Image 1 (cartoon, rainbow, N blue to C red):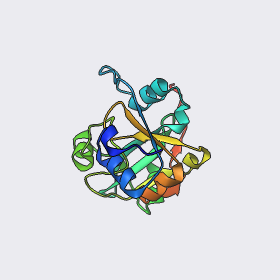
Image 2 (image 1 turned 45 degrees about the vertical axis):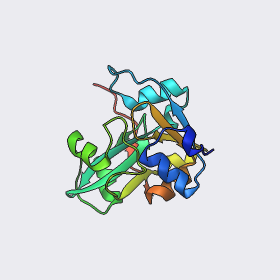
Image 3 (image 1 turned 90 degrees about the vertical axis):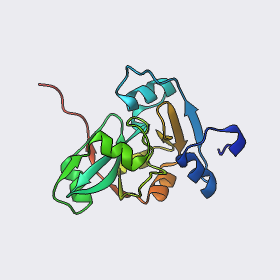
Length: 169
């Protein structure tokens, strides 16, 4: 559900959701500065399925920046991401570049309202959920919305780009 502008936090992501009339809800929590697994922290604080909380990461595919969205418990496969974008090689971008391109700090990068528009790829598994959570543009601020609305807003390609994390040896 949308919030009236006067009664809400303002970020580029929230402004876009309001402007486009997308149904959403805002969820906040106090971010622990010692916590660096931001997605896991959000899932725990929100009390929701971690698979419904999406990480937003900026990658380089053949030296072109792109946005990758995947469930928090999953790892993005560089090979699968590159394939989804008809590329050969994908590497996670430097955090300073991600912050400059997005306009947000790492751990608070929203896939909606980036400073620079990037091609986006979302793991196809996000459609299994009625609602998903993404960062609202700052740490401790999550937006809950329908996954199809997220795909539409980001113009994301849906592809299998993630897998379960590997067990330590």
